[in-house]
Structure formats: structure tokens, C-alpha cells
Length: 144
Image (cartoon, rainbow, N blue to C red; front, side, top):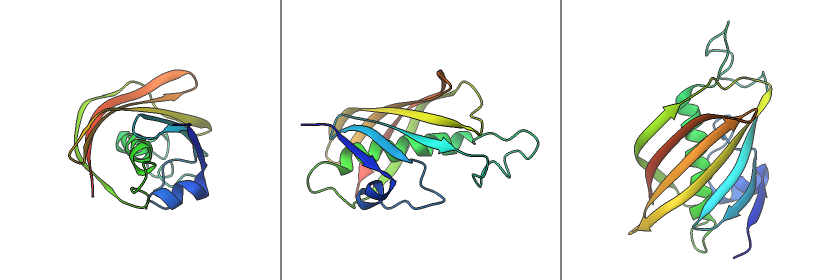
């Protein structure tokens, strides 16, 4: 199947998160059922930079994981018949936070479907900023 690209408006057609909780601005390459790549532009005006931490703003680790899971879900939502459904996070394994994610840069996201069975998909995902890996995790989600 030919890879898909989705802008923010198109992403919202496939999944239910909305601003300010939508953590993806553009999906650069989605291979349905296999992988997804995309990014989030991290302007200084993001709501979480104002509160985490005011004198040393950085993107909270849980929001980095949220960005990865949202992008991963798109690789399942782009399979025929799954558009507009939801995915529930079941667990997170092997999460590693390697460097601070700072305002003013893109957060580059890369995810892969490792396995799918009976509506449960296992994924791996990595986030990068300024050419360096910021975080990594493996996780399972249930299509509902």
C-alpha cells in the first residue's frame, strides 16, 4: 500500500484528539498497519511549556509518550474501516527519556507496529529533537 501523508486537518478526520491535546502537527509517512512518521512543532507558546517548568521549560515525558501513541494509532486508523475509532493505551514498557525536549524545535516522531492480534497492537516509538534521540518506548493499545 502506498504511504499516506496527513496535515493537521486530515489527522483530525482519522482520530479524536483535538488542540491543545493533539500532539501531532503533520504525519509525513503512514504505512497503514506498519509504521508512521511525523512531527510536532514546539513553539514557545505551547501550554505545557508555561507550567513545566517556568524557568526551565521542557516537554513533559508523558506528553512525549502521548505524541508517540497518537502517531502510532494513526497507523491503525488508516486501515480501511478504522477511521474515527479510538485506541486505548494498555501498557508502556521500556520507556526511556534521554534528553530534554525544548521549545523552538520540531519533535520528530517515528513509530512502528510490532504485532497486531485481536484488536491489540504492540508498537515501538522514538522521538528526536535536533538530531538527537529524546525518548523511546514500547507500548500496547487496544482498538475500540
